[in-house]
Length: 303
Ligand code: DON
Image (cartoon, rainbow, N blue to C red; front, top):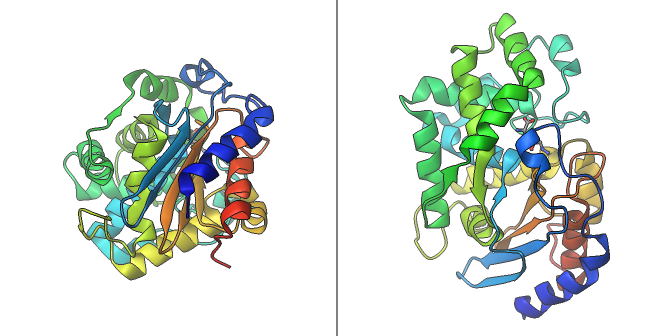
């Protein structure tokens, strides 16, 4: 397949939508990102790269980082993680508190904020330096050094009252083992990682390749874990839009409020789109349309 032509055509077709939606402004450092950006890149299981638009411009990966933190914890504790965490879609916004009270502080899944904070707590228990380990994993996955954006992380901390509420609420049910501030420090920093679309597509390619990093041949997770991470991305990766994503796109996806969305085509490739304007569910408007166009043009789908 001529992926480069597919991506070039998508950039043209999606152009009228670029700038639509609203750039996340509840984290002040994110509000400054220009809305008029669109990038797309893919990385195949054979190591082929294609990119178009602003694919080399770094963006704040935000909740896409939840895939990496989940991967790191699964590497360490395997299935024991599920003693602490559920794996059902929430159907609620990513930062919702509602279900937590009914469900006694146990987060529904690792991709809503409560679940990702629970994963950050597990990491804090497992490692003397969880932030460094996470950066090390992400850098290994994308084949070059990536870093935290200190200003974004600080801005998240200064305004993260909802996340602090989630963490404290879970702690009140005995579901968080470590000091809440330490756990939130891991979570805010993981969200602040800056990457571009090419790095992100390459970093996620292990999920398209049964857990093994293409070209490098390194096993990141077992084939079963890779299948399960993809299943969670499909059902929970885009929050209360997960049903719509499955219907319109039909691929495991994970989004972030920085405007990035990652999609996995098992056995074929990982794809990353980025455009900062978000719709009402916190997903990139142009990014979502680009993914729809990609599956229409290539016929790739898990269904
Ligand atoms: O927890 C937050 O508010 C952000 N740092 C991450 C949220 C996010 O990206 C949710 N995704 N759509």
